[in-house]
Length: 183
Image 1 (cartoon, rainbow, N blue to C red):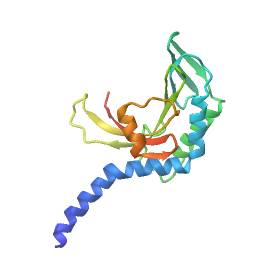
Image 2: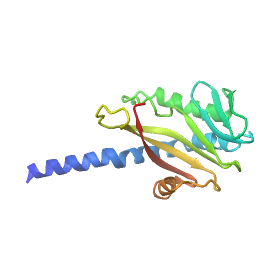
Image 3: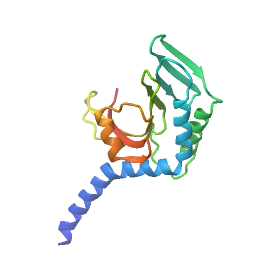
Image 4: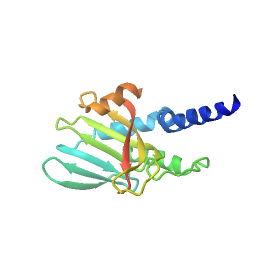
């Protein structure tokens, strides 16, 4: 009887660790830092740049912007409120003594995609689950979990619409995941 319980417990634990825990972790992380996430989303929603297609921010203080009609720009945002909120999350994460499993992608960047009317979709990676890698550089070797914000009018594609309904953490906020490869 006890011997049969061990494999069942192992299967249940692996399912929790691989499928439930990342979403629960991301949700709790959002709830603990909702004000900072909101500051970041508000910054990108009110960026004030016309014809913007995408904006990408890392922790070095620049915003990389791709425009619909005029190419690429790089703007210093080190003193901007959105960058400061993002940097505060990064600094808190990096200084956490309980963080024994450093994850390169956690809070590694903020990515925003804009529709022509200015509605925005913002995503921030908050958890990475490593997959067993078979050596194929085209095969996914990790799953990234994101906290995402979207303006009310933003047209989510079908996969993001699924996540927004099933894994909502607040109004216009949800957790989603995406597989990623080595390269």
